[in-house]
Image (cartoon, rainbow, N blue to C red):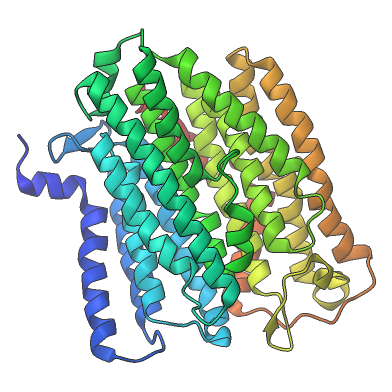
Length: 478
């Protein structure tokens, strides 16, 4: 039995965020003003402190705490760092947009902190109860954030849709968890693995299916993607940027952990589910985005497709597959944050615009923004030698090594289809007749866009740090 101090040391980032969120809430309530004031800066500092705690963790082997419900390992630390980076960058680049649109409420950064706390708990969950607690803390915060612009009918509709469908997915996940507990006699992931062995019965398989249904909703993969386009389009753009980045890290991380630690003996059962989710998501994400005119809806279908590509690596069920998933999610995070920095900067005469046609002729009015956004579109399409190409290369090679040749081939074909709508944006930027010029982006938006684009351009020059970190993360699960 570990001491309380050692358990808190294992959960130091979560402890920082939990205590900090309480302090921020008190400060906001005492101030009693509508504007966020220093709240965003304080929230960024708090998330930064948690990120430092994660990065400085030098633990080489997994350690458990709180009666084995919480696990601290390199895989968790890697994915926590990505989730924290997503939250920090979202807050940094969103301030200007929120002030201009009058949505700069002090509750927004606090809700982001609470959602991030739920993500960290979810990533380190080592049992079904811990998984549900982390999932609901994250989800409840996201429901409110989606509808934070109360005077906007679209935002209210987005929040309501997300809440209703999210409640349905939570019910399915809980039903699956109850079945697994009933047949395994434990909620611990290692305990479930020991109880079911290599021959899961029908009840365990049903529980597995319902559990994955709940997790698939959070990853927004087909057929549980129906909320994504409407919520992405209706929610304020900073909220959409947040949805597209940090929560995806947590959802993919916990799905990977559940598969590798709770069901190592049921590969043939869960592999069929993951392969179906990957195929359906790649196909829908590639074809449904072709007809979109709203760039936020296009990014919604893009995220569905990219989650499908990431699941190709997970379907392999090998250490190389998990490594590919980790690398893919890191590169996807950077590409998404950069793309949303450009979307946040899309304003004409101070008013936000969201149509792809609003980017027409951008190369003649803002050459640097046009170049950086085009590089991100090429990377999202998987054009070599940009980082997006290597992200897909790692997951497809893992599938090939696992003899899932047909899955890799379909992934490559759907990737070629998806390239059409990314390259169409580049065509609009450089070859269409100019639309009204966009306002100059803020300094933070320009910086995020430029850094993300340069990271995609230069990844192939020095990929070692990310690859080595992802390798260590994957190895800790095996």
